[in-house]
Image (cartoon, rainbow, N blue to C red; front, top):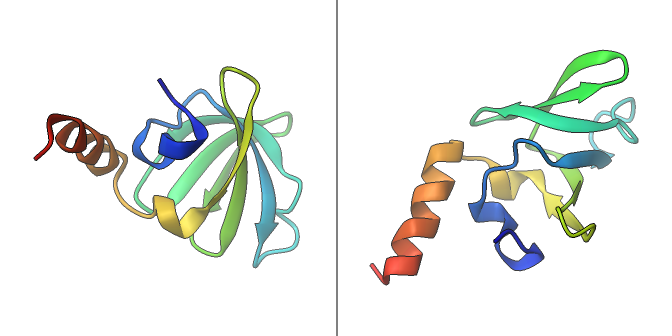
Length: 95
């Protein structure tokens, strides 16, 4: 189950997100739903269409399925999504 303590190790696709802070001031306040993710970018579907936001130098506020909001520094997400999920599985198995 996705919780604030383990969000970095989970798939972000489908979560609602707001750009809380960014080195690009035009991105602050951008909100929508995460539809894809790459090593360096989060793809957000907004009311104005698809926006690609760089993870580095950006802080994201994700809303979890239980309506909890969690602030995440994008640099903590800067790896391939598949690798973050594998880290979670290895940690659970005690490897």
